[in-house]
Amino acid sequence: MLKRRELFHFLGAATLMASGVGQAKTVAVKSFRHYPFDPVAAENFLQKLFVPIGSGPFGVLDVAGPLTVRATAASFPLLPGRPSPFLLYQTEQSGKAYQNPILRMESGANLKVTLRNELAEPTIIHWHGLLTPAKMDGHPASTIAPGQSFEYDFKVRNRGGTYWYHTHAHNLTAKQAYNGLASFFLVEDEDQRRLTQSVDLKLGETDLPLVIQDKQFDGEGKLRYQPNGQEAMMGWLGDIVLSNLTPNAYQTVAPRTYRLRILNGSNARIYRLAFLKGKERLSYTVIGTDGGLIERPQTTTEAFVAPGERLDILFDAGQAKAGESVFLKSLPFDPMENEGDAGSMPGMGESTSRLDMGAEFNILKLVVGEGARVELKLPAELSQVTPIPLAGAAKRNIKLSLQGMNFLINGRTFKMDEIAFDVKRGSREVWTISNPKLGMPHPIHLHGFSFQVIERLNSPKQIAGLAKFGKGRTVSDLGWKDTVLVWPGETVRVAIDFSHDFPGDQTYMVHCHNLEHEDAGMMINYRVTG
Ligand code: C2O
Ligand code: CU
Ligand code: CU
Image (cartoon, rainbow, N blue to C red; front, top):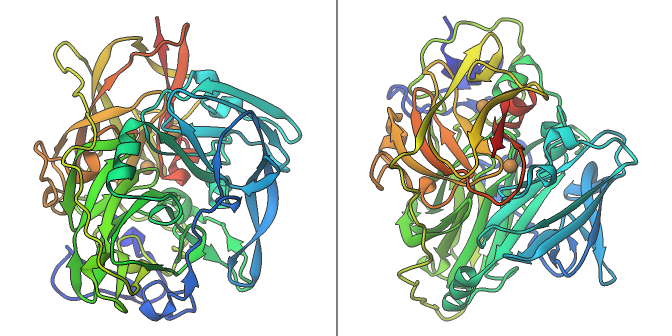
């Protein structure tokens, strides 16, 4: 019998366990380390972080009118001096060109985008976390063929926060997002402005959107995406870790507070984020999650962030002295804690990533520069998050399961025209999402509405140890969410208010944001009806 834990380490290459102290902290280190961009090796962090500026790649685009966004096959030097084929959203505004722009808009403003598909395959844009009518959501049913266009026109109803947009092409989401089709969507509002003022933040300087992605490259430095059976089932893992498309990035910082709007834009990798100065863990402050700011700043030394999730944090770089370095890292964890036996999976191949899920590695190096220490007082209150009333809420079970090689939701695999269930517009529901022990962690994502995490049950120890917010909840569960990580054996309860002002039936989806799982059909439609 092969334990699921071992599936992750399903390797011909030697797998070394970190120590003999039992299962809790096993970290596999493949024998053929150390390669040029090995993120475990601190000395490899030599590339200047790509920070968003006024135009160009990741340029901040303050949307001032209708945009034409072209999905294009282009090339991008992901590894220094080695252009790789890459997919980019390209657009122009006021004579400036942007690639994968960070779109920024005021809450309540109208977004008008014409998507032109200049790829050789179908595509569509989904606005992850935005509350749109179903027709504007970028459901895979809206996928357009090469040469076609799609018109988006909707009001940005969300509160201020760090959202994102990415391809949702039917059966091609994982490959296209991995190859580039994703970026940020920032929504501004009063709460955001108050924070920006009180912490004296400037986007692109002290307020840094930071998308973390793991990728594989071939011998020529070209992006590689070829999941074998094992990787199609468990999710594709990279072994080179990019921050804002920069491998092994560093950034020089002043001894003051920075805002990092972290987006896990990886296909399958979960990160356990911490800041380390040498062996010393430094504290940081979580200020927001998927759907904007949380109520009060929460100081922590670690938090998990799963694919699709955002974690908005403040980090005081003044905790280190001039000349010192601090690493944003992913700490070791056991993705399979709580698991049962999986049975063996012969003939599925082995993981091609040199960096296992749960391995410890560096993500970003912060080099503290000279300058006077700037100490800022954080506001005691960031925003208001009114709890969804639970009295009278309908109850619904969302059961994740594994059947053969397929992960299912309520026993179903995705069928375009099948509606798994209806919910009533204006009703409130509590969903009990349960993951069997025989499984793996799944980040479950909801289209159409934000939700609130109200309880975690039967959490693995590494999560239970972080449950400081009542009912088993961790700092990553606070505020408004659109994606929640459910560990093996765990049950997560979320509250959803299905109120919106879109007339007629609206079909949205619930899916796993492990993108290989999503494309394999771990996704269902649900419908909001009058
Ligand atoms: Cu970010 Cu349906 O996904
Ligand atoms: Cu989404
Ligand atoms: Cu999944």
